[in-house]
Length: 154
Image (cartoon, rainbow, N blue to C red; front, side, top):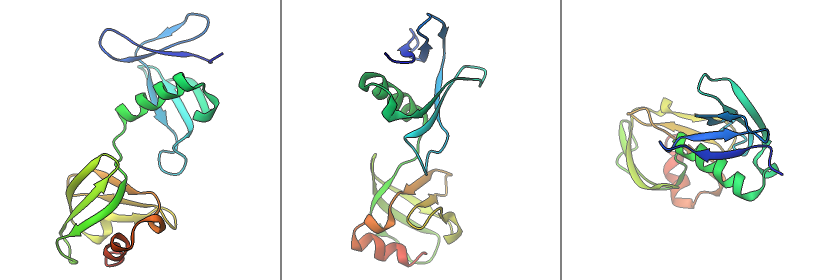
């Protein structure tokens, strides 16, 4: 049995329903560690920002509920993952980067090399000129061309 149920209200907002029938509308799913452990530590929050339920790991939930929680997280978060660098306009900054992300192809302006932060040995966080953050989850897993372009900035 699932520890709770997620439902949408008439406005399309997520709500949490406990087994005893207690309802929390709206409810928001938040990752505690979105970069280092995206599938662990998820809090279900009420409209006032109070934690309703803590999920240690998504794997603990049965499939229909797990998919709903992931959908609720994805609707709230925007952290595109760069899968490939296709082109860089210049090796001096500012430069325009053309990339393929998990959300499709895009371009962004990198103002300075300081906008590339190494979080771990293989995880990078890149801020574009508009404040959008892009993540490279595994630098070592990227193709040779992408790593060669990135090496000019690291």
